[in-house]
Length: 247
Image (cartoon, rainbow, N blue to C red; front, side):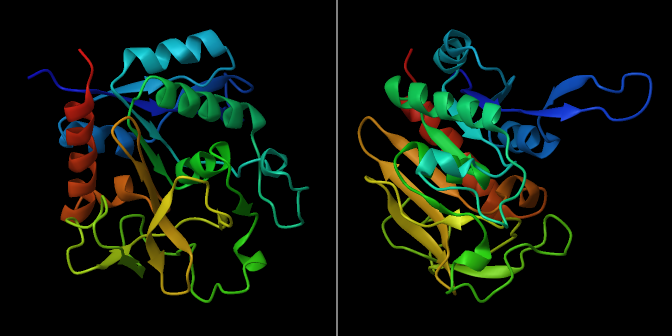
């Protein structure tokens, strides 16, 4: 059986020093690539651009999409003015990711959003964000860890009968955490499938016969190097892509 092609959204890296200072490079962290390969998929890096017709062709050429982490989502997209603790934004990337989501939904391609990826899914589909953890009065634990990238630093509670249920059959998981924005209003059609102990939404899904969208707030691609559950998450997504793949 032919391996599914997984498109991975990229970011832009600006070179600041040396002979090529000022040049820009399209990049993806290698951990995403390795996680897809080890899960049985074929990774294709999707270069960030603003050409809608090109982005549509990207989506048509792959079997599933992974939306990677990165900059804060521009708050005007969900009807808010920027607040003091908003981090660096990149509107061109917001447009790129949003178009990937729209065309993936149109062509019924599965989507897996990671960290910012989950956040832009929520915004594109009609939800909103807290621009910083401090604006959510319920936040009580540390969500931006100071530990090695693959180290799990806090727990999550996982819902029953959801995409994550057989990965965390006891309803508890332990994850890494590198974010300062969180979901505020959940987008219509989505369900919360995991939360941290202070109520922060850690995973969401919208799954039907024609739609397959999941998002997690943590970084399983960083954990997959030595964490069986993170590996299983990628394998389950790649398997789902295979099942839904259109010949």
